[in-house]
Image (cartoon, rainbow, N blue to C red; front, side):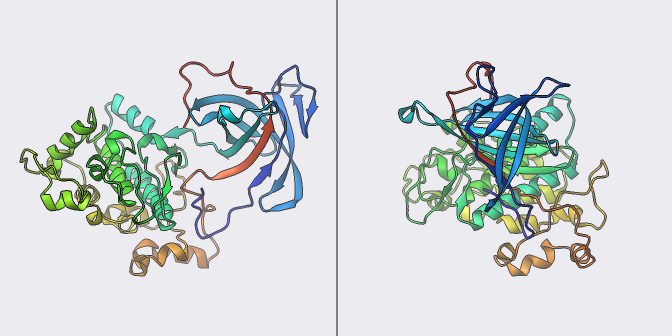
Length: 408
């Protein structure tokens, strides 16, 4: 799923292949439309296939990949890293494993070729924590702003991610680009239709889920985003529960005991109200002394017991905490321009027209009218499919995966 805004990206290449991408020595040099050769200088295998440009199947072109290697695996399948030979562009190829019940002699694998993003917010947080460093506030603003934009886009289309956590936020520290990944738990929520409550990773699970709600809304993602925000500020999870029940205890330690009305708003069917009465902890005591008050205010509006009281994604983007990003001439510490932040589509702005003047700064309008709009827009919700490849072969990856291999 892509959340590209406003401007159109160049058409994505789509390819179809019928060969083992690892190019085993036992295979002939050309199989089912794929040619497998070797680079004379490096000895690397080179895979060449015929592809079509996006929705234009009549326009074929030759696509060549090289430097293919396994970088992770999971229940979904296997992830490779590779490069497009023509552009040297790094890509990730996710091979989707099929149910073994459907296994056939000529097994077909769906391969999704995605933008390769080298890091995650999880690893960046751990790096700063181990080094006993505080993450620069500018980066926290940049990362959270893009998360809210991604959530705003998918929520506007009725999709709830249901597993927002630092591990699912891909990050390129050099460019500042953040992308939301892993839509394996995502769902289009329909009012009145029940959903499972045992969803979302524990530290980031909204309280209504802990109370067993099945008629929840996209506001569970807002809570999770608040937990990620607090973790960026603290360097560690704000609610590190050891179990589902302990997770609620950790929340109560800071937010205080929920009232009966708040519990009713979270889950009308919950009838147990036997909780110790604990007062809410002052938010400014939760974070470091020099934490900006705007950051504390935004966290407090995200982490509300009552789902409907949580601040929306667009209101979050318009919050004063992000004003620094809207300043003319603001850029990355390395001198790079920020990734596209203000290229809102008319669909997005129509959700709350009164916010447009706040969301789209005047200097962005001026850059558009002068023909200098900065770098091309990028998708922020990144199951952003770059290329689709289909191949038939036995599983080529079993001997390549170590016991600790993981994939995003």
